[in-house]
Image 1 (cartoon, rainbow, N blue to C red):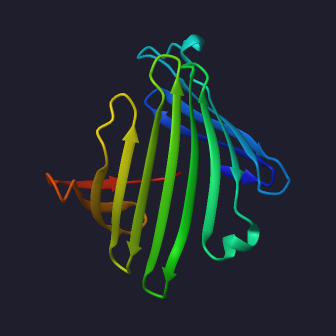
Image 2: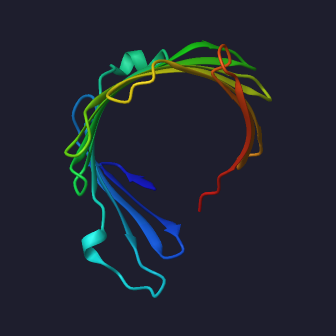
Length: 194
């Protein structure tokens, strides 16, 4: 991905026969409104390409936080995402805040409210909040999510402790519903960008 002032663009490999493309622009006015289009071009095992199967995602975002509040570790964004082919959309309000910071630690909080609509599925609302504690060697995350839709299961809680090895590898231990029916899981995540 690249940022050339007012333009946003990028390309990446998305599989054996797929490529991801992203392009958009930032409107040079207060609160940085941004519009981005994303798609994936993929072929079958023979390398054939079907234009009718190409997805198209449109995203528009708006920063709600003043520049002065950003200096104090606060950020609020309103984002709308539309899947043109699936006739589905999402409206998201996200608030991030850095509560404490030091030379060897940082405490951050995130709150997200999502409204999803679709031509084939019922609309739903999801609210979540997360607290992250970053130490020199470990990162601890406590998150709570509540969903309100036709398949609503009520609040969900999870606890995750992870450690990074370099910039690419992260190993973590997660426990879902630690206060009710604890279900632990171990995972490793490897990320490489080029």
